[in-house]
Length: 254
Length: 254
DNA sequence: CCTTGACCTTGACGTTGCGTTAATGTGTAG
DNA sequence: CTACACATTAACGCAACGTCAAGGTCAAGG
Image (tube, rainbow over all chains, first blue to last red; front, side, top):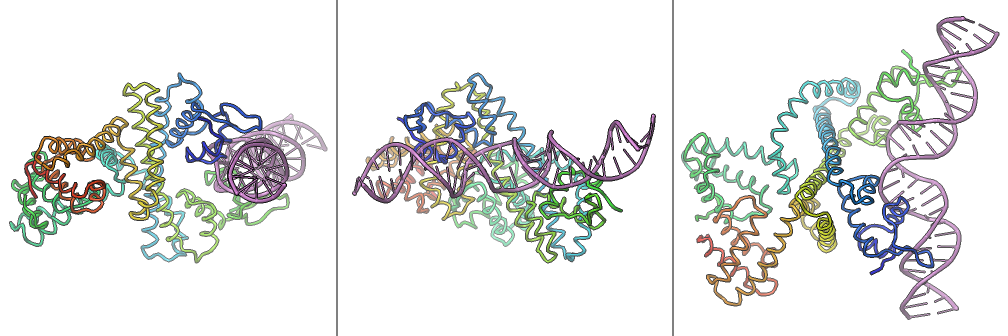
């Protein structure tokens, strides 16, 4: 099969201009040029383009991509590890930015007048910088401990924000559950609130929700000692209590 | 106190060029220009520069910064909220990239030959593109940007091997289910084999497995028209049949 | 007074990865 | 034969400066 620029571009979901540019910078040369000067691409070029686009998708610079695709002996994995480091560094900076922006928004919405705020803008930045210097490392160390959890969450398609939310919810569930357990009544307000929180928490992990699955999961908690250990940490019998509350909440018993 | 470009630049930790550029694009004009044409900055300019640098630090575009510093009535907080959204979006994309890069490294180090890997990568890319072309817009309209990203993240979050396996399994399930449905017996060998395949398939998407959750999910399929449409495509009633088979397989009824 | 070296000026090109005209030639269907 | 869709190269534009280049200015030292 042979392709002109536009045909190949459409197949690959890019613009003809991109293909000409890739030709220009020696990243992807056409198989041949016909009598009218048209670029003609063949199978091999299609494959190479797919490779190029794959790396591009990963955010690798075209200059680096050329290294990868042009020399078959080039260590692509090493290049990717290198690239990963850059991305991680980028994310650290991005996280810092986001954190600073949020702090500023809070300060701005805290009722300061615009002029006052302007006056203190420079000072505030210094304060934020100081804050970062003092606590940044500590926060990062804490953050780092959660890395495993986070990457696991990512596998399931959660954004960091969602992960945050879910973590907060989990804590709230623990607390509410403890209070509810003290009442001894799985049909009571507190227990039902716990079940509701648990539903919300679940929905971060399951894309959709059904009462049946929720009820099934509650029973699963009782059956699985990993969950039992987690929920029963402080008070034995908590898991059964949670299951009962959820079964009442969902109106379903297994 | 008065400053020339270099002195101010040193104070602020930026380059003289940057100051000239800021003058050029009307972001920070010097207080006056002396007889030799030198730029002279005063206290006020120092303050404004600090503001500019503060917003720049937050990654705000210079064009937007001009809006902020030039009009005192401008809603800086709103601009920051806007900006925060952009940053969060950026981070989501970055997380996706990092996840993909890590998967690729794993695959590359997992002993696959380069050629096989390359072939697959092209294929996966195509799948995502096709999926986007066919369902992208529709999904986006229904569930918003996030849903699309999430489902793509999930698709990309699996290793190539896992993805391949899951895809094969899904096909096998469809086929086996059709055959089983023809027998009309949800307790028969074919139906039970289908349920077993479905369990294996599920485990690619759920980290853990429980009979209860599986049984609950089966009922959820029946309840949710999205799933009904998917499974009932060829033969109406297939979903109920599958649910019955799974309930027998798990020994659990909701 | 002259030189040296550090500083200042404007002007203009380079960076990345293409998008977007512009001006012009080619292929094909009706 | 005429549209019309497609192809070509050349060129500027984008963001935020870095980096020469060519030249003027200022304070210090011989």
